[in-house]
Length: 500
Image (cartoon, rainbow, N blue to C red; front, side):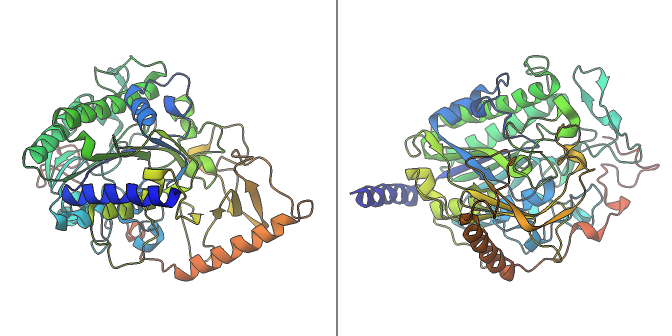
């Protein structure tokens, strides 16, 4: 009987989507921890719009990104492939980076466009700029783009004001770097960008895109990789000083306000019942920033590490009338977004090795995941060491551990950069259902059944690594100051003359 109901429900969804292809809104936060949202347990975060999505949709407790830092995580989200395949490693791309997400990789936007989808991105791209805009979103399947092509902290300090507005940002100030630009498609619209007005510009952009698509009865894909809550935080007048968590809370509230505006537009245009909204984040919190860096909740460490706090993220799927409210403990990942969207739209998958799996059974029936395991690569993956950790079912095995500067300022000695690279043979094994904080490694001696678990994990590891072909590192291609975006390219002296 259960099988019949499942089949009938999936048939209903597929029939309805084939008659009227669904819209997709993909929301992607920056440096947001597992414990930062109100709906994931934070007592003072003000995220009413995300809380409503969680209450009316499906909340994931075991959802993972693929890297504990920005660029590689974003590459995996958009391609459904581990960053080691595309070459977006080690670390992140910079304003003058020569490389970027290779053009022979296929993004979600490129999967959907052949079916007539309108595609737009707004926010933090961070997958390369390149010579003449080679790697911008408009070269990767997006019809329109409004945003900053890299991380908003990659400009001189005076480019960014924090809360209150008359206080300059903290930290390192690279006065030899161009100010952060706001780009529209492939043209610099403003340099330096006005951060205090940025979210309003994004809301207007998204509103126009949704209204235009809806009026044409054209299915659409909107990708919103937010700058929030990456340090240093900023917030415009609608959120500055209004949260309970200081600058971090203000930035989080501003992102939530933008999401609220998107949802209101979906409702007003009458397309909300045919739209899948999916929210998650790129990596864990930057704990070195203390209260300005976010919270991993009960998870261990944060950004830069392959502990749970670095790569387990909050995630929410919302689709009125299709996705029932609830919670799933199934393992899922950013890798799974592309194949899921493709299946719902009836699109062809790219003819490459995909690491993502279809999540429809989880979304529609709170069923079992097709994902057998989750692989954990460090910031600087190498073929020599391969995987740092694997999660298989409820068990996670660490073959290597290493702290990171991003996760300094915590009382846990395993988190900061002083926790040097350490191999584990046999690996450290944790039962994440009993011990999500990774405090108590299981003993092969005292718990004989763990030996069988380890053998299964080692087999999965060997099978996976046999499929892994490392792509050419895009980050290792280096940087060229001439590639840094400048709205007055022939001006002098740079970078101070790059203003418009």
